[in-house]
Length: 482
Image: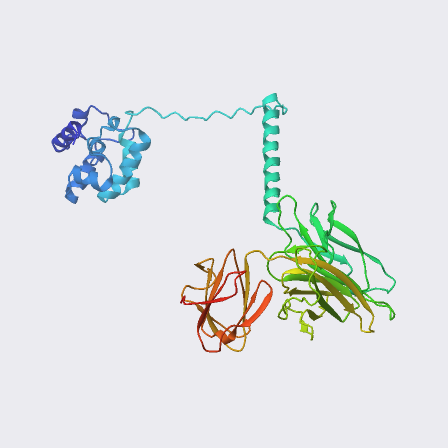
């Protein structure tokens, strides 16, 4: 507690009897009040009310949150010690309520008793706001530069937003002509214009079966595109895709269009052979035969042995070893004929056909013949050379399930677990090595081998486990590896 507060408390009780006496305070009675009708002064009433309440100034200070210094000044009637008339009225009102006195009566008595102690309060008139005359808007060079920079930043932000949207979204693609995915045209039609819309600037690609180079066109600023394509007799299948050149993203909805051109009753089938290429040389594996035909119900693939791979003339009675029937791709069913080098294929709905053709080492003539429902044919011939390098072993499980374990060039094959694996009937596996392939089978009679295109068949009996080493030009050898 401050020294000043202590002095206020020590002198408060000693002076309370003399506060209302003009001889002690030197104050004159308030105008309109006489000593005859004068009752207790306001300071005396405050002191008496506090004593009746039984509290001291410290307790009153804690309860009212008014400093004891100001409370003591109110009880002495020394209003000059208070911050001002506004604060004095507030302190007096709150203190009177706290002591149980009428706050309005206390304020009226305070106004009567303060006499000329306070000068008349001056009325403060707030100055009127000076209204500035509006000035015309002026553009300084700095304002113009700031505006241009702000506009540039906004424009750059909009550009970035557009680029982000382009990178986030793949291009759109629709086909408007033809209006349906499958359409029939007149038998005399030889071309057709495909039209549609896509994202402006997108590269639209139209792929045609049998053609290595697709049609490519760029969508215009309004997104429209069109491509003229050639038609042939029968179904013409077109795969349409779109790619954004900036982002490299392809469309999520590629389109397929099939245009059917009717066949003339007397028209022969058309035939295109994409594989094998004439004069090609194959070192390993089956020879792929692929192509497209129109107005054909079936395709026959046959191979004729021409001689050794080095070009020498074979003996008159020489002929290659028989090869097993080939396995066609899904959707195409090869049918082996009496000649082991002849296969009959079923043509797919889009006119395509494909099959692998197992051939032995040497020179071969491969002929593909397409036959129409009316019996008319079209054929193409390709000459190829098969010159095996290393070891190419085809293992076919026939007659029942068989457990296999395989070593290629002396190391376990990575495609089969080190403990071996059981393969079901009809399964075909191919292994290629530089020097050797070794196979252990849990049932030799169910395991058939074709080495470098030469069919060896089964080398053992069903249910008998054996290990065979294939290391051309040596014949297969039975080993004890497990």
